[in-house]
Image 1 (cartoon, helix red, strand yellow):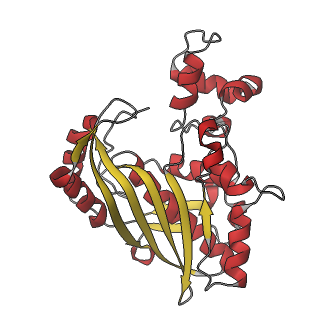
Image 2 (image 1 turned 30 degrees about the horizontal axis):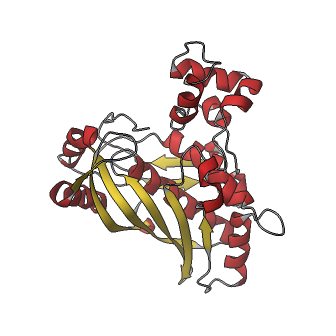
Length: 292
């Protein structure tokens, strides 16, 4: 994961101080690109432990087109809780629950989840139900069909950035659109990420899209190529400076390998139990607060 460490070094050396929506403040650069050869190992961060359970369940949630956090809460994934909790806490319905109690109630109470667990038309909705003049467009199914029919096309794109719906989303898409590319029997993907939280978000994004490429390649009967990660505003929050310095002081370890259940051949059929990382031996987790 040298490319990721190089990004941290660059931002620490060249980043400019910027204020931001959250009031936290950042060190930021504009425009950066990383490339990961998916045949050289699965790009799961080894200089700090990542939570595969969260990464995998979130991706499955995206692929299913879901936008309510209930599925995530039922599977112990907390990465989206802050936004609906903040909205609930500011409402007249708030009864003093902390965020963990809120998530438990979302998981257990379908009516409560329907009212307070919705994020608006975020990633999964745009991937699977993009509003079009002739009805909803299932971008994932469409791109799979196009890849089979015309693999050399330069139009294999899925977008989450829908300007007409941004103000209805709890958080506008950070990883905004991605493009697939087929060459020599291998599937590659390039992601454009408009806003990149280097310490917390980017390691998850790298692993998530690498998983997506593996899932798509399995569905298409292709090998895996590269994941190319292009960043717009790449930033380290001011309250993560000590954490990233600790992280880059650690020696990277051998990347794990990915095992997928050989019986699953469709992008839409993968479950948590169909995925396993083998040989993942990271350094300990490093905690950091989410800027909301």
